Image (tube, rainbow, N blue to C red; front, top):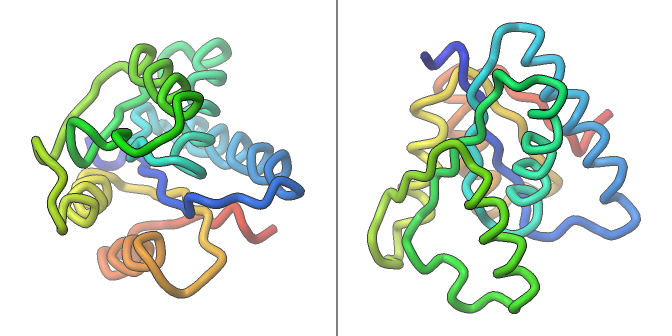
Amino acid sequence: MRERTCFFTGHREIPEKDYETIRRRTTTAVESLIQKGVVYFGAGGALGFDTLAAQVVLDLKRKYPQIKLILILPCWDQDRLWSNADKRVYANIKAQADKVVYTSEQYTKGCMHKRNRHLVDNSGYGICYLTKEEGGTFYTVNYAKSANLPLINVANE
């Protein structure tokens, strides 16, 4: 199953000027993995790159109906501090996901890391948006590298 699964990880902030480029690169990366037999795509449901990646998978399901979006969420109320507009987008993605898994019931200090490790531990590939060597995305990419997972960084061309 792992060899047919890809996880996403990326920063919450994507500069507006780069958004369409990152979306296009993500679409290309997902399609390349579909050609290798990847069917399951796991996203963490966060703002920024997680949202973009989930939307790319949902868009590509029209062309590749066999693919599945799996949301691996850190807690039930991840969106509690988000804007109403972001909450609507999140609810729409959750409603269209093929599966939703919560790694913790409530927010705790370590729930995001627990979610990120779950994504990596159950995947054979990763697609990331990494532009800085700090924070949760950097940690997750290094964790995936330590597991020798092939990674595509859509921040680089």
